Length: 137
Image (cartoon, rainbow, N blue to C red):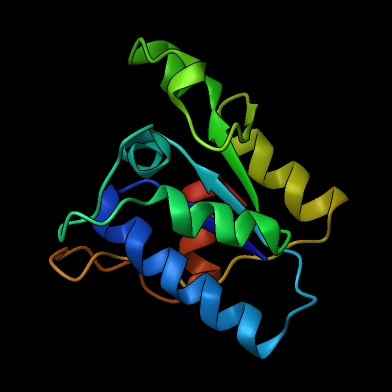
């Protein structure tokens, strides 16, 4: 299962909660978190949620359960972010669209319904059509 985070810390918090629930329901699930744009912010050293709780503890907990976190190299380069500032040293990859196709094909991963921060007014529609629209599929 691929979780796509690109909207910032509120969306990341929702994703992390959903991933915990997912692993409770299916502890053997293979989960990859693909991040780019504002979605990488929760993986930066010292990042905190709106209540001041650090993201790192939750990320490390999920990583210990096999969750794979990946960060877009282009986002790091474009924003002049030193890869050493990223926790917990997730694998980086080239821009997101080709990576999605590769993950879906080679690793047989699929997309869950889009995660949108509660304050967001963006409607993505059904998961299948939004994924196809966003990633040209």
